[in-house]
Length: 191
Image 1 (cartoon, rainbow, N blue to C red):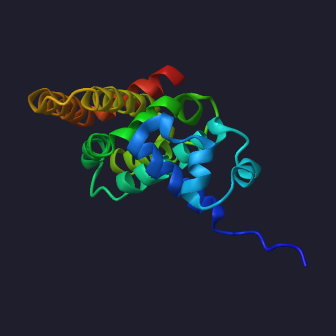
Image 2: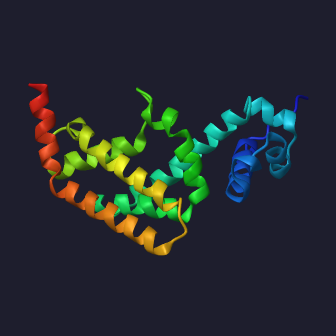
């Protein structure tokens, strides 16, 4: 009788990788250490992840989904950017991994971006029009929040962190006040 594959093994591997990443960062997720932490063997781990980069990308997707779940639970659009900053501050190691992998996950043409899709649909529901008419405004909000979050996790100075957070929230708030202008600009450039 052939062995029955462990259906929960990949989940155990990703949980182990996340624990090790949180403690030691990139140095913590050697394939041998992750296999040991997950209660499996290194060759078994290699059957699911061809190398450390593949494991890192799978972990990034998992973290992106966790971050999106947090953002999607926001009571309104204004809370989204505050929660993004809060996630970075509360999970600096996880944010570091997302930061390192944003290129392929977010900025590559055609990449699946569930957070972007959700925010654009919320903009269209609130302000009218089609979601893609707000693409430029979304990118401004995303890049502003991402830059602020990167600065937040780079310092332990509470006063500096407070200033970064306050300025980012103020800028995002102003952008939200004037979001319909970006829609009009998108429409005008299509004509």
